[in-house]
Every structure is written in C-alpha cells, then in structure tokens.
Image 1 (cartoon, rainbow, N blue to C red):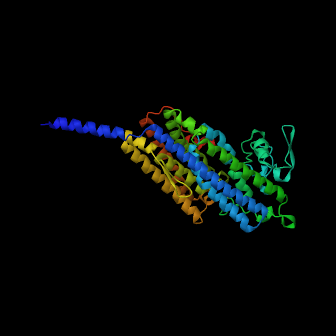
Image 2 (tube, one colour):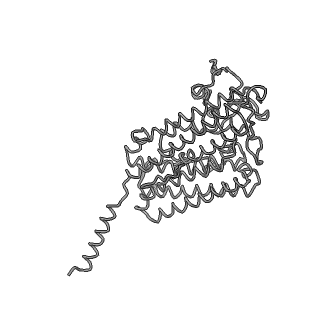
Image 3 (cartoon, rainbow, N blue to C red):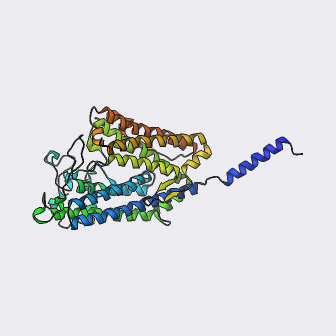
Length: 422
C-alpha cells in the first residue's frame, strides 16, 4: 500500500513537472513582444501610406473634401503609431529614431505663416519664425541654405532641429498636422486649428501665398514619414536589427520591456505630457495641439503599455497578435502581483477612456487645461494618478523578476514640481 505521504510527494512532483513543462520562457515572451512591435510598425506604415495618398489627392485637387479626407487619414495613422511608443526608452534603436517622426512641441513658425501673436525670433530660437514655405533661402551658421526645392532630404538634413534647437521640428506627424490644421488660436476654449483648403489652391484661389510650396512641404514631410516608418518596420522583421538586439540577451530584453512600459507611463505620459500641462494651464503643452487629438494620444499610449504587458495587440484589420507575455512571467513569480498589475492597467485605461469620451463629447482637452477648470483637472489627474500607480506596480514586478538594469525615466512635474517654475 502506498502511504499518504508518498502519494502527496508524488503528486507534488507531478505538479512541479507539469508546471515546468508549461513554464513560460523568456525567449518566448521576447518573441511575442517583437511580433507585436512588427505588427504595430507595419500598421503605422500602412496607415501612413493611406495618409500619403490622401495628401497627394489634396495637393492634386484642393477642396474642403480632400482636406478633410487628409485630416481623417492623419487621425487614423496616429492610432497604431501611438501604441508603438511603448517600444521607446528600452530600445535604443527606437529612441534614436523617434525624434524624426514624433517630436514635439514645435515652433511652427519655422515651417509656415503664423498669427502675429506668435511673435518672431527669440534668443532661444533664431528660426522660430523662419517660414520656410515663404522663403527659398536662409542662412544657417553662415551657410546659405537653398530651399527652392522642398524635398525630404532638405527637411531631415538641413531643417530638422536647425541650429541644434529641438523645437525646430521640421519632420514627422506633428509637422504634417500643422500643415493640415494650421495653428489652434482658441487658447483654452473649444476648437482646433482651422486652416482652409484654399491654402493649397492654385491661382487666384490661393490664400496666404505660396500654396504650391506649401503643398511641396506637406508632400515632402509625408513622404519622409512613410520612408522612416518603412525603415523601422524592417528593423523588427525576422532578421531586423531591433529584433536581433532584443533576442541577443534575454535578461536585457525583459529589462527593455519594463523600461519602456515604466518610462512611457511615468515620466513621459503622466509627467511631460499630462501633469506639466495641468501645472502650466497651457494648451501649447498638448501633444497634438493643432488637431486637438491629445486625448487620443494619451489613450493609445496607455493601451500600448497594456497590450505589451498582456502580450496582445489587435491590428488595424482586426487580427489579434498574442503570445507569452510579461504577465505570464510575473504570474509565475507572484500571481497576486500579476493580478494587481492587470487591475491597475484596467483602472488607468478607464481613466484615459473617460478623458477620451469627454473630449469626443465636446469637452476638449484645451478646456480641461484651463486654469480653474476643476472638472478638467480632475479628469486629467485621474489619468496621471493611474499611470503613476501602475508604474509603482511595474517597479514591484521588476524586483519580482530580479531585473537589475531598469531605469524608469522621471519628470520634474512629478519629481520636483518647483523646478517647473524656475
């Protein structure tokens, strides 16, 4: 007869063997992460090409309808791209590239005409009101720059971050956004930029001058965005450098995932993109200030963090990409902690969803930022607090996974608020 103790020890051994057989391997988690990155950048490229076609149509046949179609395509292109931002911070290849496609805020006077209230050159930026669209040449560090032919090479080679000033953003989604919407002159009142389609018209219908050059700039910026996304999408293919680097060291790869999740949640979104704007009551701190799309920027950044933790991403065509995840790794070490993280991610998404719903119902993010708007501040700070809270649980997960090379980026708005006003 088999003793009770032997039965118990045998059962325990069988359970351990079964658990080991189904244990999640770090390599599998990294492959899921890379597969999701590949899908997100492919979707970003796909939607950018649709935007490119819409821009070509606007330039060829300017009208209110073709301008609106280009704006709609820009909105759609932002959805997968914002979800890809979680791959920043931990992946140097993404962080080194990201400034070309998503840099903000920008001194829009570098690109095109602006309202008189915008002002001109400043001590910080001599090119803040350069207006490349209106000027076929300018001088940079004693060198004459020929802008008579506005090309992608000109934008990325001579104009982007001209004179070493980060606010001289000449490329990427936000340069295209400005060219489609124009300045938002509504302050903390409702309303986005209101550029007319006639800014791209020909002949006597052209408004604000230089319509053909404006179209050239818009096309060059959009074409460059597509080529930049083509490059990044290639980095996550089976033999791409981003995937190869990630998979070359499993512990470093898992650390990269947590670094990206934590830094995007805490310093970048909760701090620089949300809390700072509330502190300054400044609509210029909106991530998409021309199109008033900031509520979606925050929402899809949050969703990007959630779907990386869970190892799930729904592509623009509805296809689900899923596999072993960080959640599985955390659960294997501490099931209660995994449930905590999942719960906090859900709480954050509810808070960001409430901001999104309010904005889409007519209470725009501009208005939420207004001084004394308690309802708006409460909405934004609910998102901020959710992002901070989930980051604290990420930090616990980092300890549980025994990761020693994770540095989550901070923000003065969260860590040293007094410095914001100095």
